[in-house]
Amino acid sequence: MPPAASRVGVFPDPYHVWLSEIMLQQTTVTAVIPYYSRFLTLWPDLLKLAAADDDRVMAAWAGLGYYARARNLLACARSVRDQYGGVFPRSNHELRALPGIGPYTAAAIGAIAFGQPETVVDGNVERVMARLYDVETPLPAAKKVLTDLAGALTPQSRAGDYAQAVMDLGSTVCTPRNPNCGHCPWRVHCAGFAQGTQNELPHRESQKQRPHRHGFAYVARRGDGALLLETRPKNGLLGGMLGWPGSSWDDSPEFNPPFSADWMARPGSVRHIFTHFSVEIAVYTATVPQDFKTQTGAFTKEQDFDITALPSLMRKIHAHATAR
Image (cartoon, rainbow, N blue to C red; front, side, top):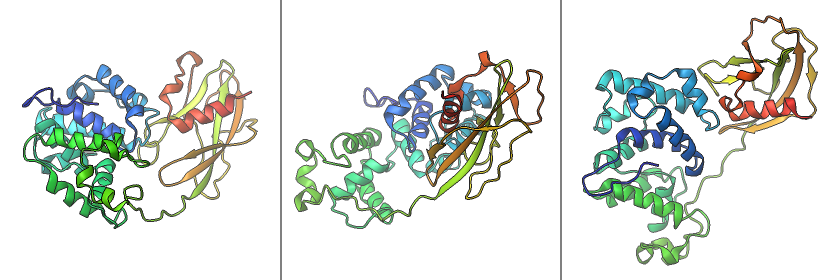
């Protein structure tokens, strides 16, 4: 991720900070690192990203999940180019008006890239504050209290270094399970440690059971090995990504292949978990003549097929369809 300032007064490139923070939303550092490096190799600055082809960016994002972030990434880059000449604005208000930038990301850019005294609160900081002050109110109701407590500790100078230090404290020492209190520099000030509640905090409200949906996917192969792919609608899950033709995902999807053929059901199914629901996909395959024409999607030649350009669910479907 973007390195902290190597000396006082030197700050990371705002483009690097913004890119990493967007990628890190709901994704682990380990998963993000290769994507972050790849994006900086392909598009080393904001103007190059803003000028990039949408499909190429979505393909480079494939596998990282939460694809609305990739669409917002492009929209934000182009907004900064068109409204601010390619230079990120410094004010929190202007940053939050940009696509895909919420309170946390705006604060992170302000503090880390511009050295402003912004309060940066992610899940790690919430956990540290809940334990430090022994906050019993469960999340998400406790968010405002924890943000206010974090804000009271935010220094006026070197706020970016401070923010990254607290996030690192949460990720390496004040961990979700079995916090290493013996190595914590705040242990003597920690009310949770004093009360013996550090392992229990923060409390969370019980979550509702995730809905389970069903769907169909149709994998067609032409006589020359070409595969039928389509670009999903820009709105909705996996929007703008390549995938296999398929049904809606709901309780009772309709079996409606893209064209008439000898569709064969593959044994078993593909299961996938999204943020708000899980889905079980029945996979059907068909082989069609080499000169076959269809109004749905387009056939991609075998030598041009790149599995890494597909999102995780579509990769699972491909693996299921081709398993022996």
